[in-house]
Length: 289
Image (cartoon, rainbow, N blue to C red; front, side, top):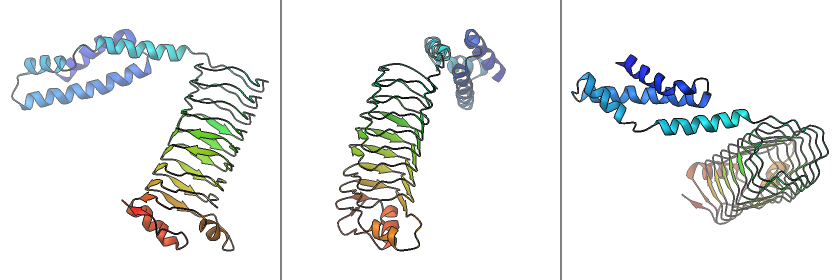
């Protein structure tokens, strides 16, 4: 009967052979149908009845398959435009859809990327000062040795976004959700974070001096050897957050960490215990949740 289910799906998906996302849907659906068939057999249904009920359980899936196929083909047809080493200062890219585009070593100062879908794009060694990424999709984007000073990321999507050896001085992150993003060896002094959510974010060897993370949400976040002098988490929520101080032959790292403010913060027991174990921060006004 498994062969019969496979044959049924092969016929249903035949017009879309070769489309990766549709193939993945087909494999998942076959697994689900096989499981449903086994359940019906266990309930005492005969083969033919169980098969008919299994097929009925997925309803009219042809329309869904067609929609996925059309979307996938549209994405596959997109041209991978090469915009390397170009003078694109103040260019208007608002609302564009560009996947895996290359902006390497380009001049993009003041460029407008509002609402653009830039999934997988690279901005390595580019000058994007005052760039406007408000509402942009920056999933899987790479910023290596990129100057993003005073750039705006209002309501931007940063999923698996990689920022490395870059300047974010004066950058504005407002109503931004950062998920599984990595910010490494980057300068974020004078950057603004307001009403942001950080999930699975890694700050590695970053300069975060003076940053205000007040009343924002941190989950599964790591501060790994980042400079945190005068950083404020006042009223923030911290769950499964770790702090690994920079290596120092003196007490500088601990003295800097003493200046971090956690007044009114809420944190889980593990985060609280780890911070308490460092013996340097004031946790007297922290709520353990």
